[in-house]
Length: 165
View (cartoon, rainbow, N blue to C red):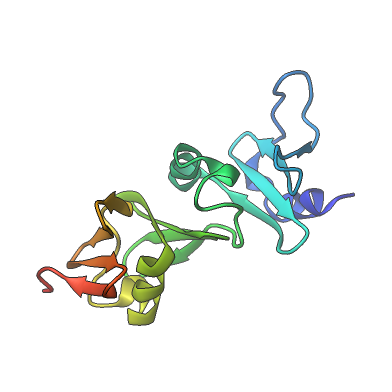
């Protein structure tokens, strides 16, 4: 039994393993660091530092669009969890987070913008949920939230900008 098998016993709603390319066994990740297994309704990823965590639904799709384990977010470090206000959900990853609500969809937050948002109180802060991914612009990064924007630049660090309700 592996840590991925143990996690699957806790998350059997993920369904049975899928057969991709002739097998449904755990697979080593291309970076040689972690392991994964795909299931009918999601995937479980494992690393020696953090253990095994599941990713599914729209958060999994967004994460895959961003490069999965090879992207800026890296490996999951939490299961998908619920959060408020509303029907929000999130996964944290080694390099950032993805937050989702049925009304807004899934958006990623990372680096100093994520740190500033966390400092303010995450989705329960005056900014609310992210409504854009972090965007790279000349000389700065920015991310829009329901009630404002966080902008990061080398000279200023991460600051809240724009209208705050």
